[in-house]
Image 1 (cartoon, rainbow, N blue to C red):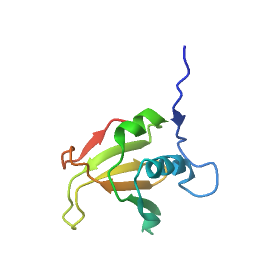
Image 2: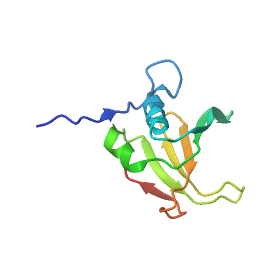
Image 3: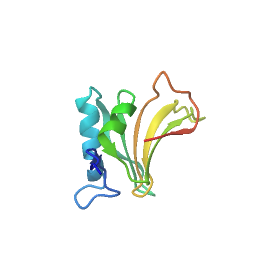
Image 4: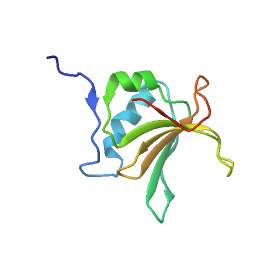
Length: 117
C-alpha cells in the first residue's frame, strides 16, 4: 500500500494563532496566484469567528491534489445574501469557527452547496 503524498491539514492548531493549521493552505493558494484581500479578522466578536478573504476563487482541483482535509473543514458555494453579500465560495472550519471566503468561480452555480474536497 502506497502512502498518500498529500499534506494532511490538522483539525485545529497546536499553538500560536487559531488559524495556524490553515497556514499551508493559504500559502499554497498564494503560490498558485491568489492574493489575500483581507487578512484574518474577527467577523463576530461575540462568538469569536475569524475570516480571511481571497481576491480570486479557490483552486479547487489543486487543493484536492495537495491536501487531505479533516471532516470539520468543508468547502462550499454560498448564494447571495439579503444583506448585500454576494455569492461566493467559503471554506469553513466548523470546529474552530474559522472561515476563508473567495469570489465564486464562474463555472459554479450561485447556490448553497458543498464542494467535495
